[in-house]
Length: 479
Image (tube, rainbow, N blue to C red; front, side):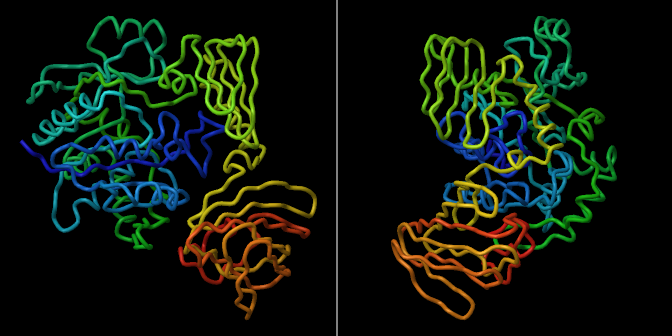
C-alpha cells in the first residue's frame, strides 16, 4: 500500500565533536565524511525508491543556507522548501515548525523525520523499517526507530521494547533510558529487547502537534508565532527570529516521546551510525588490515588502529597506535582514538578564547563562490578568491582597508564608484578605502583572483553593504 508522506530532513547543528573538520559555518552534515557524497546528500539519496515520498522539507540553520541549497538543488528529489532557523533550538521546535508548515492549507500528511548527519549502510532495511513505521503512524502513533545494538554502547540512549503494536514489526515503548554506564549497557544488549535511540521518527503532523500541545505547550506557542511571522527570502522560508529564539531548546525525545502514551518503536538492523565522534568515523570508514583509515596525502610506517586525515598538507606518521590525527589548513587534532568524544572539551576552550578556528576554515564558502585566506600579518592579508560564472559579490565599501585585485584567470567586471570596466588575466586594479565597489564574473568559467588587503583593521565585519543579489544586507561576514 502506498502511503504519501513528506520527509523532514533536519540539517542544523555544528557537529563539534568532529572538529577541526566540522565547524560552526561548515558543519558535518555538509561534509563528505564517508563516501563521496556529503551526509546531507546521502540522506536525500536514501529516500529514492520509497513509494509515496513527496519532495522533502529541509530545516537548516540560517548561516548554512547557501551551502545547503547548493548541495541539494541539482538532486532529483530536491527539497520542496528550505526552512531557516534563526538559531538552533534543538529538534522539538524544528519539527514543530515543519509540521505547522506541512499543515498549511488544511493538509495533514505523514512526516518522516530524519537527521541529515547519519550513516545507514543497509538501505533496503531502512526502506522496510520506514514502511512499517508509516503504517503504524497511520494509526495515530508517534513512531521512533530503534537500532538493534551490536555492542554495549554508552554514548547512546536506549529504548525498551514493550508489547506488540498494531502493525507487525512495531512495538509499544516500555520506557526510554538515558545513556547508561558500561555494565548497564552490557545488560541491555544481553536482554535483547533494548535498542539504541536513533533520533528518527514517523508520525502524522497533527498527532505530533497535539502531543506537543499536551506536553510542551510553550514550544508549540513559540513555533506557531515563528511560522506566523515567517517571510519568503529567495528560495527560503525564514522563520521570525524573535519568537523562535524565545522557544525552549528541547529534543523531541524529552519534549514529547518520553511523556506521550502513543510512543511506538520499530526495531531495525541497518548498519546505522550517527558519526558522533572520530572513533565512529573510523569504524564506519572500513579500517584496513592494520586497522587504519588513511585519507588524503598520508605516509604511514608501523601505524595501526588509527584514523589519519590530511586535508591540505602531507601528514607523515611512524610508530603510532590507536590515534586520531586530523589535519586542516589551520589546525591539527591529535587524540587517542578512544578519547575522541573529548574533542568537545577542546571546542569549549576554543570558544572561550574566541578563536576563529572554531567557526571557519581557511576556505570560506559564499553563495558566489569561495575565498581562501593565504596569509595574515600586521596591516595586510592575502586571499585567493574564486567567483562562479554569472555570480556577483555585493556592492560594498570598507572603512578601514584598501584592496588590490590581481586577476589570475577568467574575466572580471569591476564596479568602482561610478566606473564599470572589465579586467582579464594578469590585469589588476586598486580599491581605495571608502570606495564603493563590486566584483562580478560575466564569463562562463570561474574567475580566479588574488586580493591583497591593507589597512589598520582587516576584520570580516568592516563592511557597509549597499546591494546584494543574495539578500545578505544583514549579514556580518564580508564579501
